[in-house]
Length: 222
Image (cartoon, rainbow, N blue to C red):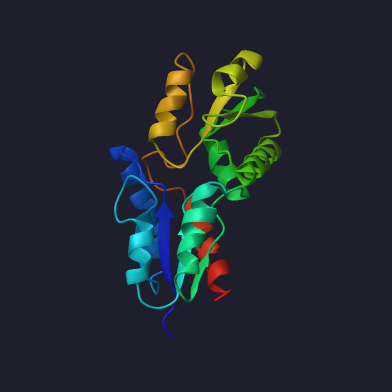
């Protein structure tokens, strides 16, 4: 019996390097699941659009959000797709998860300086819980203080967090380069920022493992 297809859905970006990095993650997931049809789609900016593509796919489907938290795109866009299509389940978003903390920690220099975790931000209250959970996981992983800053929708914003914690290192909690990474660089022009989780180099194995785990857990519910 064929396994459910995996529709890997990211936000989409006009940044060429960011788009290539996410496509590389999907390709690695495809290699890790050779018996699964792995398809890439988006909720904004890029094509194919997930809402338009999903109804054209045959058989059971697991939609895996390549998104770091719950929010509008997960609960409105993706769950909206599932309501209109039989044998479709939505996996949990990528974060929060200890594997993400591992990759974030690898990006940071050693030391005891505090860390500002720069999060995209959303008005959805579920995304706030996820951001705080990720901050707690990174703090536990590092053994040093981690403070949250939001690049949109919430406070404190990044300039305010930097003013309050002038000795902190900025860790960008973003999947890949794009609008929010560019915004973070503009908001902290004199500070070094870590690269996103996908930095354009080899795809970190924890990210591949995480997407596969999200798929397997959701597929078990079908």
